Length: 106
Length: 121
Image 1 (cartoon, chains in turn purple, cyan):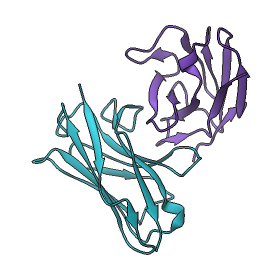
Image 2 (image 1 turned 90 degrees about the vertical axis):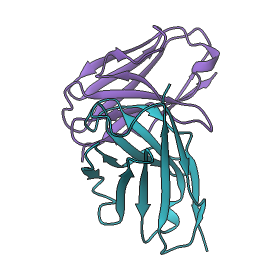
Image 3 (image 1 turned 180 degrees about the horizontal axis):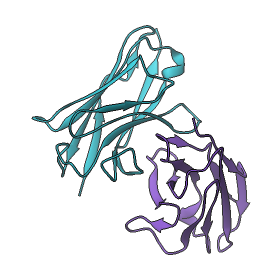
């Protein structure tokens, strides 16, 4: 099973700042990595797929990068609605999710 | 616009079977363009893939749950189902149905709102 490790566990930032979230895979997943946003009481929402492609309707402030085992989700200019938990997910070998990064208001 | 809706008992006794259905609106589970999946989330924890169903009925299950889980569909009624047997308290959580964006175990682009299931006597 491919393990995904997300860091940091919690990121404390102010609105307008840049958020940089990391996801590391235990073995190469090529570019088969997605990012989701989840708010309390809601289902996850797909943000990024294939490491760098924004899903339909996702604002341009969200961007993904990386390949192989190291991936990054960047949120440029945090909006109040961006404070949430973010998960990465690989589909190279079945599906596994990372443990999540909580982006909280500082 | 595609919409998925989970339904089923919210309280299940230990050792019994958890059964949920996912109704699909605004799209067909017969479509060869997508697969359909179940994901769960224990209270306060992260996401876990349970399994996936293809439009032709082929199933793929998480190795950690294989042997206890069955996913199937009813194309005439446009829904698919999850059965998880021999449940324990560790199986409590929110169960989501979702659509894979491609006809494989790809990312999940549409999700139901989730069904909170508690395993307790």
